[in-house]
Image (cartoon, rainbow, N blue to C red; front, side, top):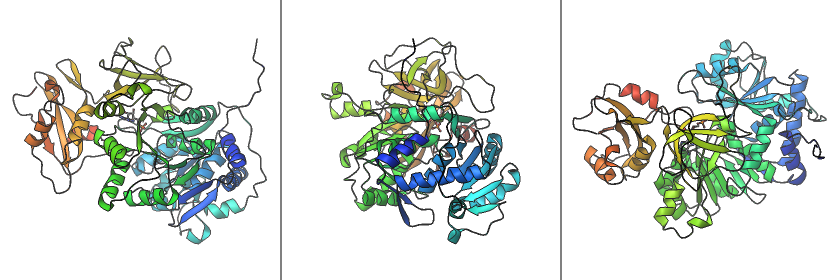
Length: 543
Ligand code: AMP
């Protein structure tokens, strides 16, 4: 027997319909790329998104066509996002921090027909335009007054283009499994891979992230997505905020500590999300100015491991509840969030912090397990390391234009991360599977060593890589960027780490550098470090 409920497809544009109808007056505030703060509402944004849809439709963009954006978080980007999806076209957010050749490769691989770009990126795109034969039109996300002279083919200012539509248009209806968005993984090895989100997966992901122990935003919140919309589906925040009726604050191109703080204070931001690098910049600003964060209640730190000292400072000094979170582009992107339960109430501050440094637990609709290399499920004992695998309605089943089967026999996706899971379901990432150090047949967690090293007061950033060793196969090398003006020694750092980690995990050597290379999404580029230190000779007697 079938259930007798209505067939109501889970479509992304229904989220902005809901926001316009029920939270129509809620503000959407952006730092525009042109400079000034811009204010609009969900009602107005909805009307303009419909115009985007109508205008694209008039340009011949149809169901399944790809429209790329190369843009910061602003109201125009959000309108375009919904407008593109609302006719069944696919919003392909391109990461401008990639190398120009990679950007061209991605746009061609995706088969994008239109490119919407911020003013910031006009010079970059002009340089690669000759390599983009498939792009029929460039829409610069600005008005006629700011439109630069450009060599881009068929270029138009977004506001002029939009003004040619009257908004008398209805969203298209289609199946909820239709593709809605596309985002390429940063691809530290080989070519980037195209992840394709569906309307259904995006709506379900927004519901997942609106539960209390995840992002938990409500109509009382003021949400600042510092994470760019081009990074891993914008962590779903552009769906999550209008679904809950939260006020949305968009930081535009300026993600430095002073600019982010200014928006937080002026708009009374209560909830925000971003990678550790931006929260480090904000901390530096707060420490330098003595400013506090009285309105900020919750902060998601994800995309890379949150250092213990960062969690502690935001919680204890600034009174912000830090939620450490793990996910990936292929998971829409949320995998786990760390919130405490009543069971932790009696713990001492240090023990609570131990839990908070883990990546946390899965919400409903994310299934997670760890296995050995043969696929045998490993115990949830908080100690056994294994390959981290996931399953769920917002997890990738394959990549765009790629025949490779990425799921195992049970339909699990191998995340490429190595982790432990404890009896309470709290997961701790110990490494990327290609970064873990195999020493004497046992695994050493590079992330654990890095987190420990950055707790040293003179260390700004740290990375650990494996160096070939004749006896132990591989041994850890610690690479340190000292804080400005500080000159720590090898002995200082190793002395600080001694006793805080198993003896055989201790790095065999420490080197000091001015800078550690990062990927386009802010992660430490271990492949580059391995190249640089390939011939590094470890001192004798290690291991
Ligand atoms: P991306 O798809 O670019 O967001 O990268 C996803 C990868 O980032 C994951 O597979 C992890 O290796 C890493 N990652 C994300 N969040 C965390 C976290 N909280 N701690 C450690 N690694 C993380």
